[in-house]
Image (cartoon, rainbow, N blue to C red; front, side, top):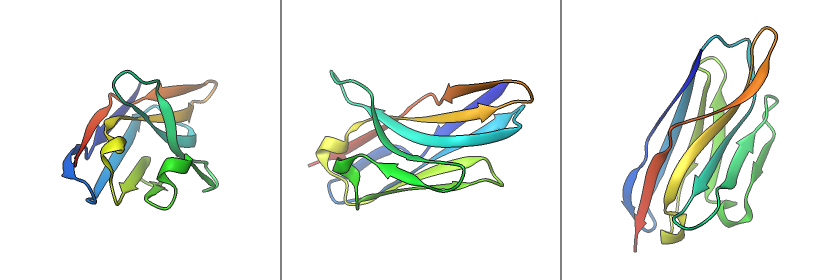
Length: 119
């Protein structure tokens, strides 16, 4: 059994900052890629940022330079620091984690956390 618990969403004014967290617990052997996705109303879910087990990162162009993804392997937690937020960043943010058990591997999704940026 693997659980993901997200936190850190909320309402913020444009230009403000938020930090999202996603903690993974359960029967885990290792965690590979960890990522953040978002889905705005009427739009498809999109990748925002991801970080591999080796620490390599990828960002969608629209957040490059404003958002920073990081991970704490000791805590099985991934973070998304969001600065200079814009109204177009408003969405439900989901973490996705590639988890390895002893003899299995699969992706798990968090429950989602709402981020609302007011203009």
